[in-house]
Amino acid sequence: MNLIQYIQYDCEVYKMKRIAVLTSGGDAPGMNAAIRAVVRYGIGMGMEVMGVERGLQGLIDNLFKPMGMRDVSDIIHRGGTVLKTARCPEFKTEEGQQKAIKNLRANGVEGLIVIGGDGSFMGAKAMTDHGFPSIGIPGTIDNDLAYTDYTLGFDTACNTILDAINKIRDTMSSHERVSIIEVMGRNCGDLALYTGLCGGAEVIIVPEHPLGIDQIVDILGGGQAHGKTSGIIVLAEGAGHADDLKAQLSERTNMVVKSTRLGHVQRGGSPSCRDRYLGTCFGVRAVELLKEGIGNRIVGIKNHQFYDMDIIEGCAMKKEFDLDLYQKAMIVGR
Ligand code: ADP
Ligand code: F6P
Image 1 (cartoon, helix red, strand yellow):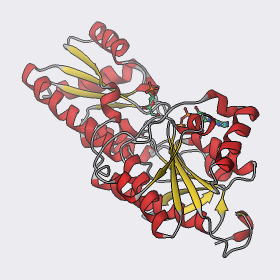
Image 2: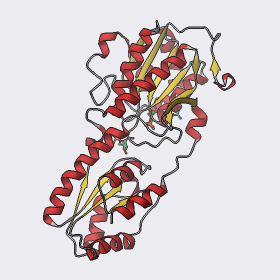
Image 3: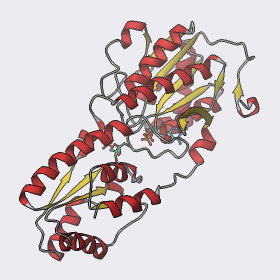
Image 4: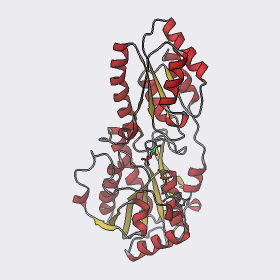
């Protein structure tokens, strides 16, 4: 590891006595697995672990509580986050950050682990800038962070969406209709791409590669010409709204079009095997960094290898959409 890149506190052998963990931004399945790993691995390394409730807001409001081995029993299989989460505009201000630092120090905490998305990582960076070593764990169903192949919660959300697509397909096929299924993801099309591919969608619409209404009509018409009598369109929320597209397609075609916005069902549910694995390994990695007094890092997975990198560098990376996979998905969906 390149020690120059790291912000080091004291000397290499310095061992933190007390660390804290919180979840911030939108919740994601697998966050509980990460909390459990941080608590148990931290204690296993001889440290005390505090949980902070309600995300970065909890740092300002002093919502610290000691976490023991048994406090994280029976949570690995649960969606959501037992520590609660929040969005906290005050944390973007110097005043809010100073309150957080004061409370961290008053509670004897020496290092912080923030589980969340890129916004939350900016909060973690602010703490390190104030001399407080902090580590980010990627937790968001959107999979919108460029530095890591997968974020916590993405796999579970994909499986939840797939389950819905399968069910909708049954009834669309029986009634010979077309269904538009709007999925989450903010400005990232990954949820739509992977679930469209795996759910056998005829059309996948993502913000990274917009399709015009004429193209969509052509694709559906082509399917009809080849004997298709029903269809599935997966629409990323960043590319438009299901109801608007339904109105346009109903006007332009003779097909009966239905629309479903899956909404928050996509964020809940028991985490998949993959998300429990990621949560556990991210949590362990974060503790190992803090144990060495290292902050300002975010942990991730690249080509099946767990690794960590500088927060600023990682957050500045631009996510590349997998256009090749998208094109393949659109061809095999016809
Ligand atoms: P996510 O972490 O999922 O990207 P948000 O973008 O809503 O979610 O960010 C979560 C929280 O992170 C915000 O409510 C705020 O408290 C904190 N945050 C976001 N940007 C910054 C920033 N530039 N500086 C400090 N804190 C920030
Ligand atoms: O970032 C996760 C996410 O679920 C997005 O996919 C979605 O756009 C957003 O959060 C919804 O946020 P809220 O729960 O605040 O409506």
